[in-house]
Length: 329
Image (cartoon, rainbow, N blue to C red; front, side, top):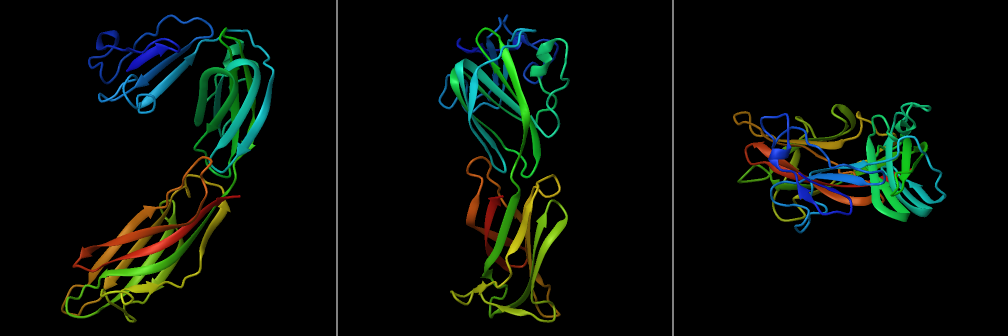
């Protein structure tokens, strides 16, 4: 662990400075230096391979903490203009221009971030309950360009912005915003037979492809053949090992995102049918989950994914190419 008062040099927190534990490398308490109003105290945790002074030290920390030292009961009114407020499905971008140098911090939560509209002392208005995401601009300046992310699409968020200056004066601004809803489209493109499971001839197989939201909610199922109606599969050179999949586009949404549908994943299974005297060969894949970028580059259009189904019995295996798009509406 390393700490400093912003503007001063970094110092490592030695094991001898950590109290109340038998293993100071894992837990314990330590004291900050004495702070005065307007100062910012910063703590970072690094692994043993890096530190603030080494290459990448400004970004490769494991965790960080900022403590703003503010006046207890004095709330100022800073003169500022909101130049840009842009809300996507997974982020809120904000440019705030103040007429004097300030620090900027924001927290957001689906619950109200203000514990009490009339607290005593007054400064408790500046410290929110249960923030889900936060961002800080700890450079004293007039223009703050801050993006808070990742957020859940299609949800109402409460926010609390705190401006402060180098004398410890502060002001809070609070309100609400709604993120855009998420829409996902998925197309099956091509089935690739990598190994047909038959060394001497072509194989015969059937397939089941499914798409899930969350852990258990099946939203689409594609069956290709069955035990009684097998499809010939061949792993020789194209085009014999390629099968175009003519299946309607799967559309999920527009909808709000929560724990029940945050993850979208694909399950593949194929069975290469052998004679009654042999064990059928099975290939399957659970996943991959579709990756959802967040921030200003959150949307994806016609992105290809190759989903491999690896063998569980025998040598039979295949892959499926899909394309997907992610929009926020």
